[in-house]
Length: 293
Image (tube, rainbow, N blue to C red):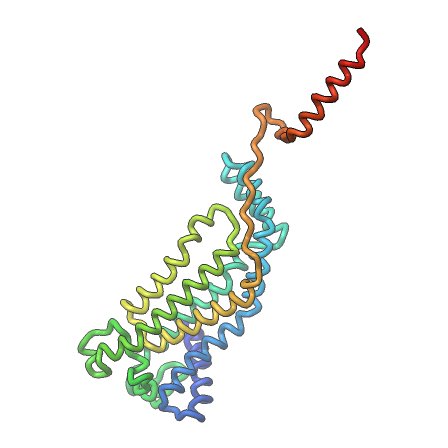
């Protein structure tokens, strides 16, 4: 069912490996590592237009923040009406949640497609776009003397035939830590553009929750070195892209609280300054002096 996705992912990686193999040699670990890195760059280059649409939608949502605050105050006791009015307001201005999540949703199948392809390399067998010889070349490829197919949590009997556990940790741990740091900085940068609202309290925790997911995935799940390279490259691209596009954008202003209503249901009476009150008292005193006895 997902074979077209697997062939597409492995095909892009195969093309880059052929190109770098001409320069570095087809069995070079650097050629295989660069093919993974440029697979990420190819994907992210294709997602530039959806990302710009996401930025425009986010800016429109920030401009609508005062109106959304007013709707929440007006329909506080009617959640169904609040959802209906919020959706109508967003459709009127051409914004929505789908355009905001599209770049992330498109990256998820590519990540799992690459994970499926990389874990499908077995000696003597073809693997989608890769022939048996290329599969053997990938399994023998090493980065800093550690196989690209190795991962930190692999069983001891499997790791003993590839590399020492400490050698694997020396390569994988820095990759995981750098990916987590890039994820943390990206989430903090995105948080600056988050307007006040129901999700603001939840989003405040994302700079700490998202990096924990990266740390847990890289240290305790069977993610090989090649996948960690993908993860780090993708995180670094996201951080640079967010910094270039959103770094110059001022933070989202805090939404002003709604004005309190009068008990009778009318509009709130504006407060008068002490100067205006003093002027009114002086005017009334002058009128009393001019009044005939």
